[in-house]
Image 1 (cartoon, rainbow, N blue to C red):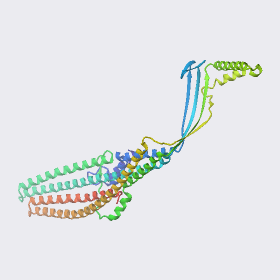
Image 2 (tube, rainbow, N blue to C red; image 1 turned 135 degrees about the horizontal axis):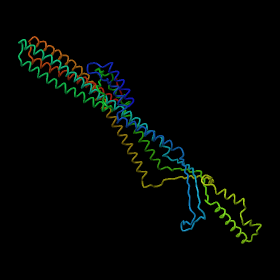
Image 3 (cartoon, one colour; image 1 turned 180 degrees about the vertical axis):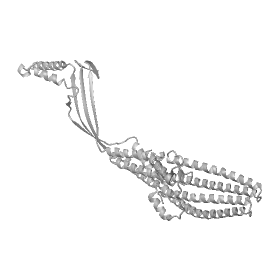
Image 4 (spheres, one colour; image 1 turned 60 degrees about the vertical axis):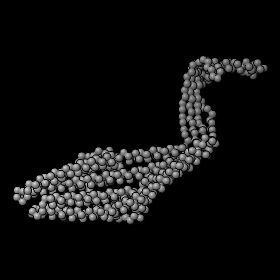
Amino acid sequence: MIRLCIVMGALTLAGQISAQGPDSAGPVLTLSDAQQIAKHNNPVYLQSVVARRSASANLRAAYGQFLPQVGANFFAQYSQSGTQFSSGAALGASSNYEQSQWQLNLQYTLSANVLISPAFNRANRDAAEADIGSASATLRNNVAAAYIAVVTAVAQANLQDTLVSDDSAQLLLAQARVAAGAATPLDVQRAEVTLGQQKVSAVQAHNQVDVTKLQLFQTLGVTQPKGVQVRDTFQVAPVEYTLDSLQAIARQSNPQLVALLAREHAADVDVTRQRGLYTPTLQIQTGLSGYTFSYTNSNAAVLSAASNQQIGYELCIAAGGTAATCGSPNLTPGEIQTLKNQNNGFPFGFINNPRQITATLTLPIFDGFVREQKIEQAAANRSDAQYNRRAQELALTANVTSAYLSLTTAQKTAALQQENAAKAREELALAEARYQVGAASSLDVTDAVASFERAETDRINAVYSYQTAFAALEAAVGRPLR
């Protein structure tokens, strides 16, 4: 929206400098300005731009698969003393206890899918870029068509205004001739009816201008500024390209064909990616971890250790040992203090666990024909992409040829209609001059005006039909030609 404000501000300044006529106080919008505004605001086009971001994120994620996956967690638990049963066995503790644990896990997976995914996602990213080019060309052509429609409507409205002025002059002339006794009141009434009908045509023509402007700004994706004007800078000139050169340009530059080629390449890479489902997958896991275990009553650890030492001493004596060989049945003060210090490890006085590394090689054997289904689907998508590309190539040849022939015909038609309009204008001037001197009737002038209106309308339509045909040729080729 900021860019739109800047562009419209520039248009306002241009309108103050370049606008012509009493009704040209608003900003002047050129075709290039309209195409730039649409590129930043048209919702359909911006959707294709958003799709590129998703494709770029997928490519980045595909490269990320070459890096190990890392995860960390921390666990803490408090439990009351008492007996618990697990699988029918009684477990218990003589005191409340606390424990904590941390883990840092690393996992690395290597497979054919990991190796091929970057190429597949890169092809999709390139296809998304090509789609943007195709959407941009389509938008440019739609804006050009809507802009030409506005310019055509403005030219038709200006013609109707000219005819209103001419009919007003004819009414004044008829009134003057009646006053001089050179005409009848019927001539005045006929001139009034003609003027009234022409005013209706002018009102309808200006309404058509407003409608086409609304449609233009709907295509641009912005609200129409008040009093906006269009600038007609179009010219009718012979085509500077041969048909063969246009066909060659289209095969290289047509955005729709380029996008279909990119989609075909992505579909081909996808077939290779799906075939990788038959290859084994290597997975390596390792990590670091530590734990703590503490009684809330430190004496519980001492009592447990003392009981174990006493039992061990008694078993040693029962086995034939002596007091000298079986050691002391009691804990020393140092051992008691050590046990109390070790019981204070919760929650961060971790004892490290032994490190482990696990490698797993998985070879898929049978998965209910899921792999075969995916490969067939990928192959079918590739065939569809190939057929779409071939259809576009055939359509491209036909569209460029048709547009070239239509443009050549439109150029010749515009030249002929220009001559016809000039002759009709001379005929009208002669009829008006003869009516002024009484050598012709008002019906002769009315017929001449009608003939001039038809010829001028045909000229305007021919001129802008040429512009429409030129835009159609640019759309078929896929890039601007002027």
